Length: 114
Ligand code: 5GP
Ligand code: ZN
Image (cartoon, rainbow, N blue to C red; front, side, top):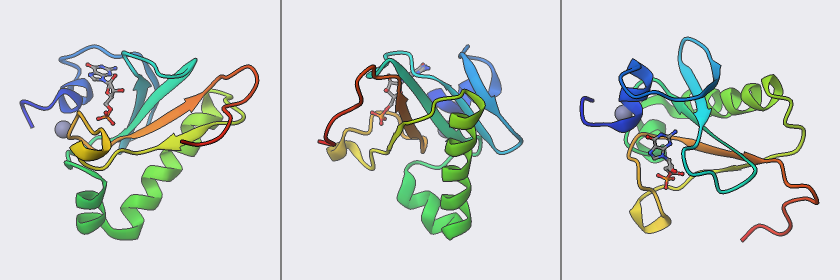
């Protein structure tokens, strides 16, 4: 989609700091990190949000996105990490191209979720 920031990152017309890439997925550093390490893991193909990806691609698409996140964590030697996904604006989703947040790097652990 021409007006989608993450599609532009996939196309290379907006620069990004890539940390993992394969044929179907891309991971890059979040421009405003909310943790010492903050990557975004995205399918290269556009879908608006996680439930749309699930509707169109089912368990395989969801599982492969999660696998891409695990591979990103392994490729960058994260050790322990948190995965998060905002589904819809009410949950804080700002960019409507499906993405997982991969967060890590806390010196003393991340504490309780929420
Ligand atoms: P959301 O709130 O949609 O779950 O997360 C969107 C994330 O994308 C935010 O953490 C934000 O900092 C990040 N972001 C927005 N625009 C850009 C950009 O142009 N480049 C990069 N690397 N990250 C972006
Ligand atoms: Zn897109």
